[in-house]
Image 1: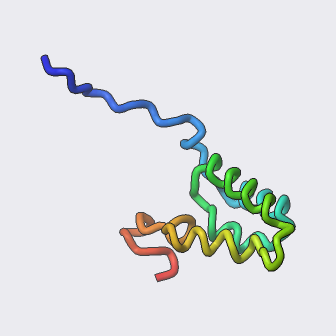
Image 2 (image 1 turned 30 degrees about the horizontal axis):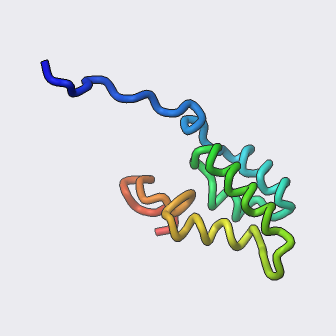
Length: 96
């Protein structure tokens, strides 16, 4: 028998946990911003990654001109994440 495994590696348990509307609302509350753009950016994304991006935004909140409600959806859009994920609804992004 060859050395090829016939089983898949187990997915990271923390990557299996994804952000739902309540999680996104809590992230928006931590960032003190409107929940809609945060939900757009992170709904359905791995919670671990959402937390990392929230930490990043908190580090930059004192930067002049920084706005988490604009920066995080922009990040998600550029990377095809959240509402811009292409693997939703038959391969089309959620917004068209």
